[in-house]
Image (cartoon, rainbow, N blue to C red; front, side, top):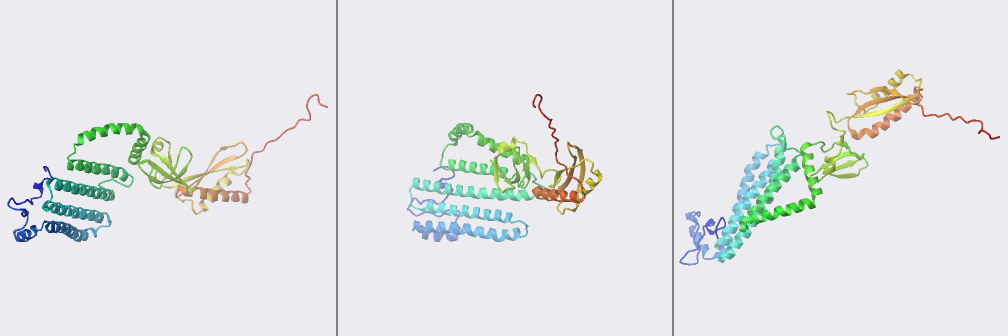
Length: 382
């Protein structure tokens, strides 16, 4: 067997004079006697190497965690501790698999059998390292997102994008390594994958459109988690999830709406929590009868807003006269609240109090009236 999986990689060679396995070059001279004793029993020697490799791996992991945790305990986050534990597991896996590979080499197996066994063992190691790599990439991105002054591009809203990219790279490297282990030429596979990719692209163009739209939404960030938005359809609610394929909106009726990202990217969206503040401005339209004291109306509406405990003091409420209606003088009360989710309740309470205040001030709220004139009779009828 040639390449990285050849017998030269594990220098435990068979003696030409007998069937006893000679000690490897890296073995200390003090242990050569024990090696020759165990070498007469290949199964016992293989078991010793396997157990020794696993024990050495877990010992190295314990040593790394013992000293590493002393450093990570000084930090304010547990992400570095998770990364350290993943690194310790990788060390244990590599040393354990090396011990198992050495055990296979000393067993009285045929060359073809030993080669297949080593390849299977290395394949399992690659899959384990891929799993550890995926965990480490996610934790590493979390650590980078906490360092705002140096890696501002990696934050909560962009984590799914970078997580997907690193996942694709790790899986691609693992797949390439598996192909190399089994001596499979990846060129033909890549060419076939290109043809399949074109076919899949046509068949799943809607899914791909949502996928790319998700990338653009995450990068551009027109809205974020917790924002209150209004869609073209009139649906209004809180953004609860911004995924790669879709965005989820929780309405005030406690109904979750799932909108494909391609629609979100091509629609007009009103973000009520955007701008300089999270605050939201309520507009209450009020009509009073012609002949009312307009200064008194302004005073009454302003007082109602200022006495409400939820209405913000900064910016302060204001009242504006908007025009002359068919049967009323049209005013508008403008006031701010701390969050858009409070709009319905506060509007209800303000309208109730405005009605009472106008009634106390004897200011009439008009309603449309029509006069109907009936002629005495039709021509020619008697």
